[in-house]
Image (cartoon, rainbow over all chains, first blue to last red; front, top):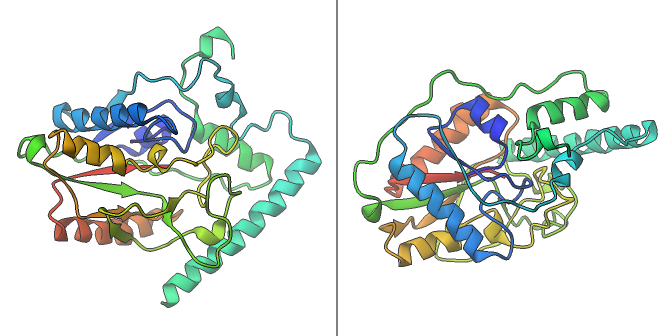
Length: 108
Length: 172
């Protein structure tokens, strides 16, 4: 179950239920048990009925009528040079922290 | 968005490549790609199957800062070993360590990224035989070799130990 169609299909998985939602909602809409149950049932149905590897089934659910979220995600369109520099420094720090966590894990 | 791109899935690989190039990183990530995909048909009816959830969400880590809904990206919350939790409990699992869409998602409802409640519902309806006794966490490791040669093997061992028939990976 996922929402990054190109990444998952590029990898190749036995069966894939694609929800065209912003990342973070692969199992359905928040605070919407019906959406979440329908998404899971679609996954179970796909598990049961897919006949060939790399089968993708797209959930019929839509996130919203407005698709602005697709244009906005990690968009560089309106980022100033200063903002890009700031984000670069922020990500450099994130990498340092992540490396530290990984190193600590290896030591235990 | 123009009409000729409506309902088109977001091209994440190109979007992320452009973003990190703009930040000055000149080593674009190469996503995993396999030319052959394994496939195993079900060996018994779904209603007889034990189903397990595999998640990329992280358990709460003490002293690692904000890991809840709305938390900024939190590398301290990352985990690098496969883990398992009690599927009969409603444990906290967060996604503060992954780059989900923070502008349009709040991560306030665990059911939107970890469908354990929905899976229990499917069991109650008789659609599946059982929920596996544990849920399983898989690290989001940039090292594909580590993912394939270590994490996947550790995960498989847990699934086999619990006699899971079907595993659903919910990626975030």
